Image (tube, rainbow, N blue to C red):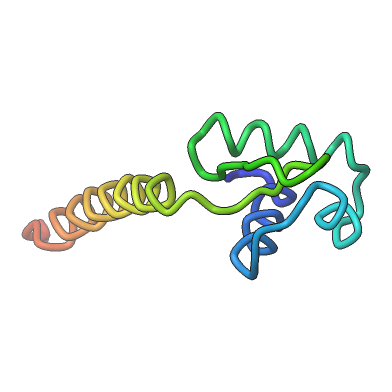
Length: 93
């Protein structure tokens, strides 16, 4: 998700399931580049695909997004706890 193009693809797929060609029309990259990004997102479990005729339609994977959200919440909870620990330390004068 660190790549801006992947984030843009996720935003597009949040609107509705789409084929590679539909995504490529909305993004400033080629179809092969969209396919490569979708492969990364699929390998990460964030999108799924299904054959519809001669094309594959991609959609967000709710389970994968929930897992990502859990990881991000854990990260932020730890970061905020660490920050709070620093703030709560008595200052030496």
